[in-house]
Length: 74
Image (cartoon, rainbow, N blue to C red; front, side):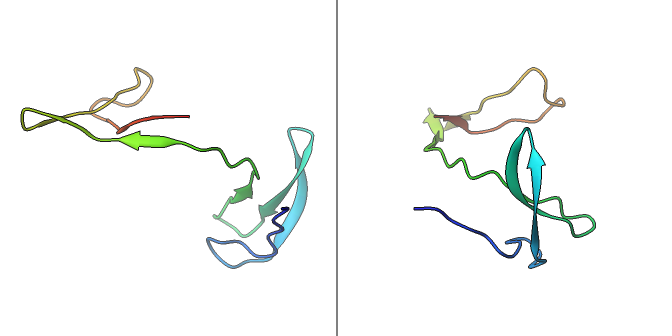
């Protein structure tokens, strides 16, 4: 099933077609929006791990200090 967006789901501006990474993508050209419909849905899972009343969070070394996330993956 092919999904064809006509309007931006963020700002409702009509979408345009542009080539990004050599593939035609639906993009929003409204100033400040920047939405791109990548059309690559992937299943993911997220988990919040609790152990002895504390939560285990993940951190990427490239992120700014004190930024953490749930543990996620494909």
